[in-house]
Image 1: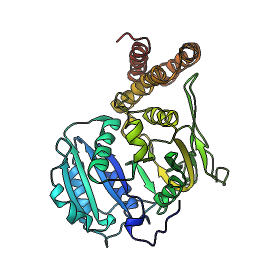
Image 2: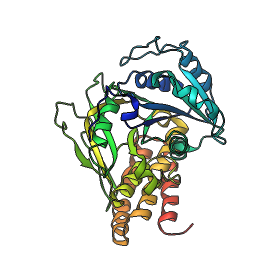
Image 3: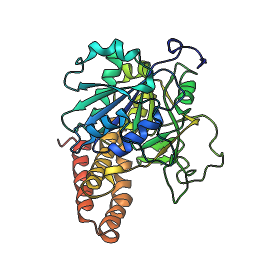
Length: 361
């Protein structure tokens, strides 16, 4: 199925673009500025503030008023679509301010923002689920797009994602070509051109990782999963397989969603003409954030294997984990990096993951 972008919004699928913010307003407003310059005509932007502990909310409001120009090598700040009209919702009562829905829908997509406020950090999975429920129940969206706040998007990225998504009723997930935001000065280095995973040893592979893009992945193809930093999901599929599993909290949830979609008869597809740039890591690179990330990355491997692997696959996974992966990782964290906190996080993640896998909880 093809559609003509020259037609009005009634002829194009409605997309809710969901951006999760937690203390990262500088990244968020750069992401927003790029989103508000896209060519796709029928979308709503939903920013979920996940209980930020800094002045993120005020800074996002200032940006929407045109008072905080963004600094970016990818996108120029535009004043002609400011102010951006905001309607704020409490996550605990999303019906608040819905009386303004008709007013907001009369405003062009690049001049409106729906801001959902959580009173605590709900994690990546539940934070996005809150917005997806809102998009499905109140905006009647055809697609939801999960977009990390530390991304910048090409003007045509959503148009290309929808073109692929509309090519078949069995296409449930679509993802773009993702570049490194800045890789040793390069903006043409691939971070992700689709994902493959080996369930026997839980090995995930980012196709094209750190390769210079010379067109080697310039075709659309089926993949095992789409990267969570930019993930387009068809609402008709979400209603059947469910939203993100919030027991993951953060990390590995896109692997889980992808395999649930596949087993429900839905394809995940890489759309090479759609392009974004992703910084990656953010608050998880250093300090407490890094330890939390390490904990969930290892714990959630076991959770994934518990949910989706056969007994024989779980046995092979455990053998591989403890013979090869465990001791190698401990050596890197403790001996080479001398990072005691990260080592503790890895050990705790392993312990709690084993409890899940072995039914000790």
